[in-house]
Length: 267
Image 1 (cartoon, rainbow, N blue to C red):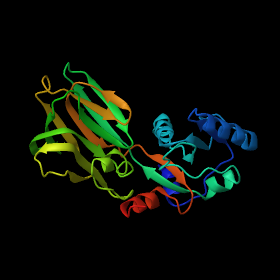
Image 2: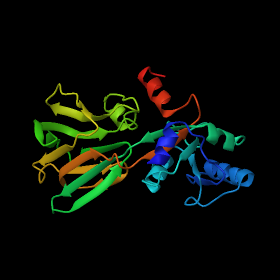
Image 3: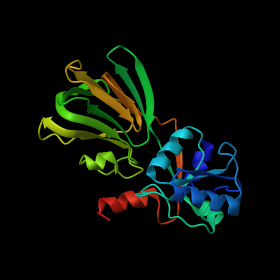
Image 4: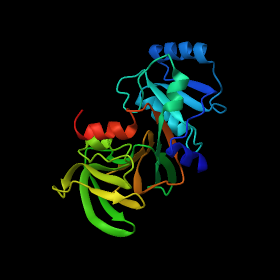
């Protein structure tokens, strides 16, 4: 964890060995070829830093690939939205990386039990979401740290979001935007029918959320951790994995903290 502490203190980032990953689009592939020619390339495993060229989807894939490796990821936008990415420029890349600000984020860990008793474990950087699989709304019981808080939620689903993921699906579901360093998780219903006025909750990031699916045979539910889906679940436990740190690098003035703050003011 000493490497993470150094990053938090703003220690310059080593960038002698750079690996370039492309999303595979023509635009991203062209950018990767240009940058490899200008800066050389190391393998992702040996690199000091990984430069991801694409959009937010590629950034999430890259973070999952290096989960637990504490390898800094510097993204440049060659996609569409690019909320997690820096602006694309070919010049001064090593200087930009050395001066970049590190954001340390922790993923959620999901433990999902299916109707046949199988257990799936997966991590999510943005959110864990539970979604109805049929035309009927899901029915769920919610407990926090073993204490029942809602005996029945009737909704299209529910999600648990990290601060980093609070501006993604959580925001689309009218959930709150969380500052990146807030020790919180957002628990947000998706199209809640009962209780009609329940808008979710803000939870300590040390809490464990347990969601039991009621009438799972009649109202099947899928659990999704970022891009990993488990269908026909009966019980899902979600907690933040504080032991795993992910390192994102952003140019000064364009940090993830700053972008999240801007989202709260609508620009």
